[in-house]
Amino acid sequence: MNNTPPLPLPEDEWKLKVNANYQEAMKTLISLVTASLVLPIFFIRNFLGISDPVPIRPHLHASAYWAWVFLFASLLCSMFFYLGAAKFVKVVCGGKEEWPKRLFRIDPEKFFEHLRDGAVGGTVLFFVAAIVALGRFFTQS
Image 1: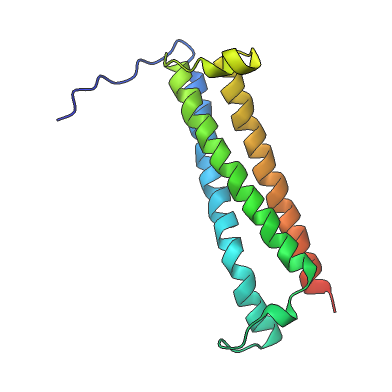
Image 2: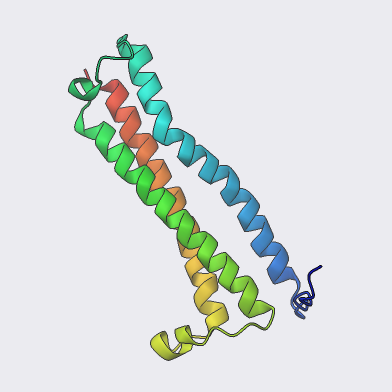
């Protein structure tokens, strides 16, 4: 039995709802990004007719590697999103996170809100860049 009292709801309960909606959207995007890390290998093998034991490295161009770099950056941004979202909920519900105020002279709620929002933008931007790089790979001769 858990004796920890639940977090009190803040006056601005809408902030928690918005944060939850962000998290639902990010779950979908992270699933797409994660699948995209592996799918190019299957696509390359199918489109180029390369059997499984044969390495695909000789058939890859720089754009394929860039796609994986962008996908990794997208995943990294999504991890920052979840960190920012969790800390945002903590601060909104009355938890103490004073280091943003000490280090950056910014209100902790605003800091984690900006971190969360910036991480969403980075996740989307890097994912789109990865799709563009994969498109370039498949259109190269």
